[in-house]
Amino acid sequence: MTWNGEELDIEAYLARIGYEGEVKPDFDTLRALHRAHVASIPFENLEMMLGRPVPLDLAALQDKLVRQRRGGYCYEQNLLFAAALERIGFTVTGLGARVRVGASSRRAVTHMLLKVEADGRQWHCDVGFGAEGLLEPIPMGDESGVPQNMRQGEWRFGIVQEANGARVLRTERADGWSDLYEYTLEERLPVDYVVMNHYTSTHPRSPFIRRPVLQRAAPDVRRTLVGEHLTVTRPDGTTDERDVSADELSEVVVREFDIELSADDSAELIRAHYAGA
Image (cartoon, rainbow, N blue to C red; front, top):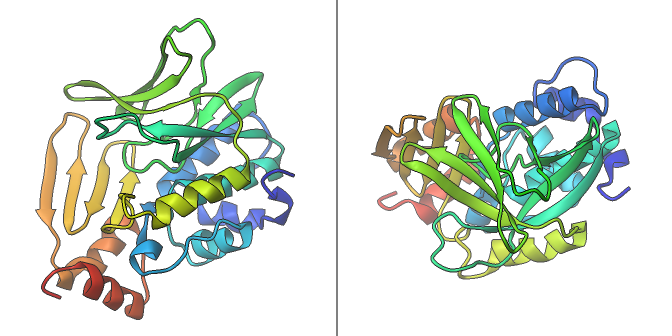
């Protein structure tokens, strides 16, 4: 099995995301699992901030994201989700994307997403993009180039196909549509994500080794903590923004992102990355 789904403790995973009921390889199950995973497991890069490696083997992912109830970034989240889907009986293909958010030039392929087959259609799934990411699957679309748009909670997402064949996932903000990332249907294997993960978690130019990044998507609000700056964004474009002091960091991480670090990890995170601590 490509994603080692037979090694997954499926009952523990379903309990972690708060999923109850029957699971079978159909779209209703896929949609419910996707929404539950996004709602329950936040995006975070804190292992890198604590000077630790980011292992991608399924045993490590289950220990961190399921048993310790921590979050993770794209490879961790989508590899765990792929294993769960494979265990249930879905056909899952790994894909790679070039992130466009904040880009002034074309970036390398460093993001992971999934193509999943259900009810005779191909679905774009991604539980690991963070605050602006999908809440549920979106149709992959076809070669016609007709945009695939859909509302998820209070947010709108779309996929457009460009002349070069790349598909682009975008989200609608208060000032119009904004590109999130581009991808093709070239299959990526677990070993490819090991290489991407090494770059993303260690390279001096990676945005994920410079400062803590925590994000959470919800149907009516998006939350991000980058460094000490906390932002809560609503669909109409209004935001609440403030700086989080070192003294309140642990409480904010629990309240806003449902991540509870050990006392030692909290102290080390504050010492290393928060001025004035």
